[in-house]
Structure formats: structure tokens, C-alpha cells
Image 1 (cartoon, rainbow, N blue to C red):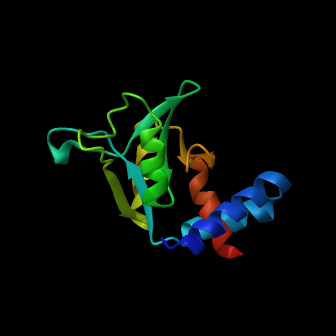
Image 2 (image 1 turned 180 degrees about the vertical axis):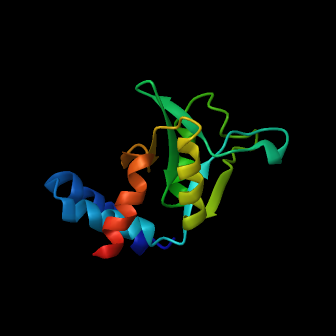
Length: 142
């Protein structure tokens, strides 16, 4: 993702947080849904096939953590001491997925008991996964 899209999402997030207006939140979601890929962090495992997008527990609920770009994913992974996200060489494995495939994956996680999604943790936003279809429908009709 180029820095202009990176900055646009930051600006849209700041505007949505300060105004609390539905239109501003919709603009943020539209920008994120228009990204070609979403990015997940994964714990280091011996076998690369065993690596899955990270789901963490916050406030007693399981959340999928995802990011609008690889840099934010790596930055967040490095903030978790002993999280298992950084290998001996100091690398973080990021799973980058086509946005539609990421959405399909997230919707499938609901049946496994995952409650919500957290975008760009540290300075981001969140939503219950079950709200995602309604968000997409709302954003696409505008």
C-alpha cells in the first residue's frame, strides 16, 4: 500500500473518531474495503502450513487482528512481548490476503466463536464480525 492510501486511512479514522458521524465511519470502511489486500499477523511455527491468522482475546472475547498494511502488522506484532510473532532473525511473518478472501475467512470465523475484528490495533477500530455484511452492504450502496 502506498503512503497516500496509508495517510488517507489515518485521516479518515481520525475524522470518524472525532465526529462520531456515520458518514465518516462509512468513508473509513469504504477506503478499507477498497484496499486490494488485508494483512494478518501469525505466530512463528516450525511448519509454515500450521500458521494461521492471529486471534487474540480481549475483554474475554476472541478477536481477529488485521491490518491495512504490512508495516502496521509488523509494528503491532513487535509490541507483544513473548507473543511468538518475531523469529530469531527479528522477522514478523505477515499473511497478506486478497480483501474478499479475508472477508470470507472472517465470516467463517464466526462459526468458530470469534466475536470481532480489530483493525490496526494500537490506533485503529473494531467491529463484531457479524456486522461485516451489513457494513459492506451499507458502504456499497453509497
